[in-house]
Length: 123
Image (cartoon, rainbow, N blue to C red):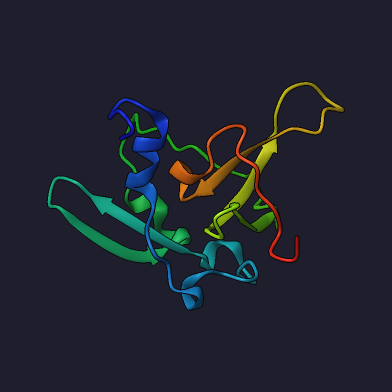
C-alpha cells in the first residue's frame, strides 16, 4: 500500500479515461478558437467555451499561468517478467545533460518500482 502522502498516491487523482476522439491531434487554426473548460468551484459547475472568452472569467488580481510545454511522443508499452503490461510515458530528462536517464510516469506505477526489469513485448 502506498502512503497517502506519497506522490504516486496523489497521481492517482489525476488518472482518468479520456476518449481518443476528445484528444486534439492538431492545434486550432486560430488559437483563440481552442476549447476552454472553466471550473466554477463556488457553484460546483463547468463551462465549455473558447479561449477567446477567457477575459470574461478573470477578475482583478487573478493570476493566469500559460503552459507552453509540448507533449513528447515518447510512450513505451513494456512487460514485466510475469507478463504484466506496463505503460511508460517519458516526461523529461533526469539528472545532468548527457545522461541517459529520464523521469517517467508508469501505469500501473506499483508494478514498476525503481530497479524493476522490464522488456519490450518482442523481448
